[in-house]
Image (tube, rainbow, N blue to C red; front, side, top):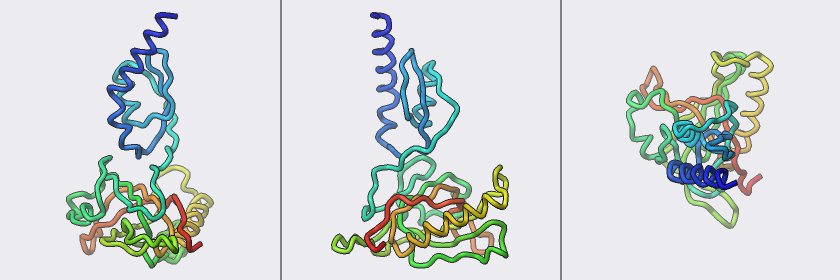
Length: 221
């Protein structure tokens, strides 16, 4: 029993020393189960899992989506760029080609217009719209005004990924259509996970992703 208690204490000490600073971010993309010195840790992030493995522990290989951060409709959105928290203004100030093909996660609000390309002209779907951190929050009507600056978003399927058969693409389009219809005009807090890109014709910055995730609807619905 004493050996088990010592192992537990040692594992907890390693976990707290290595992982507490990471937990403060609370916005990693996946949750895993890990084991270190006979102690099981549930719902740790990828960074935390790496730290546990480096300390002699083991983690399962099945990645599961983690919960979104405790961000509510009406609060300002933000961006995770290459795992670091930043602002819409910081990303908008960058030259597109300097930050192209980097991992990015946006929390924010869809603008007034959502443009869908005619489905017969593309494989799967394509939605173009703008996102911002959101403007002033009107508590009386539970509404968010438009914010500046905005970033261009392009939603279209990655056809190189498995499972992109016609039926699946059709369902992905429907899911995106429903959320964007509800979310436009800053009517919902949403999340976009994707990559940065540069338009070939203008060199302007855009964010490419497959799906939009609804976090919370506003009061206009």
